[in-house]
Amino acid sequence: MEGENYPMRAMANLNCVWHRVIEKRMSDLGLSSIQSRMLGYVYFQYCREKKVLQKELEEEFKIRKSSVTSVIQILEKKGLVRRVSVPGDARKKEVVLTEYGITVQETVMERLKGLENMVNEVLTPRERKLWHSCIRKIETRLEEADYD
Image (cartoon, rainbow, N blue to C red; front, side, top):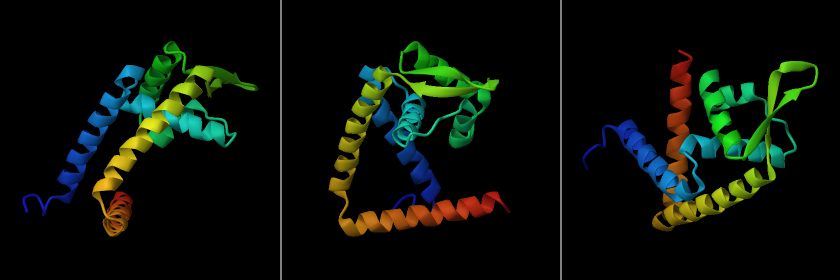
């Protein structure tokens, strides 16, 4: 099979296809992949009753402060989130979902669930288990290499 010796290329290609599919499925919501992911992170923390600081988003998504600021500004313009100064330190900003943001994220989750179901239909339970095992091994090795 072509590409068997290049698993990371295959994974990168799959990642590109996955993001294109997500962007197409979310296009009517006007969300890019990173906007959707960031909104989702804020939503999951909201469900856990945890606050999200802008700095936390930089670390979680491994992107620069300016990139996070840009995404947050877009989400604010769309009415999905708002930034609130943290009492005692006006430099820190908490990212808070709006009611509209919650509604949109619930729609996103429904659509992602549908995509997950579509993918799960083409894999047997054994293949899914093997897939997750392989992904964990690759992730562990890459993380180890990052610390070498």
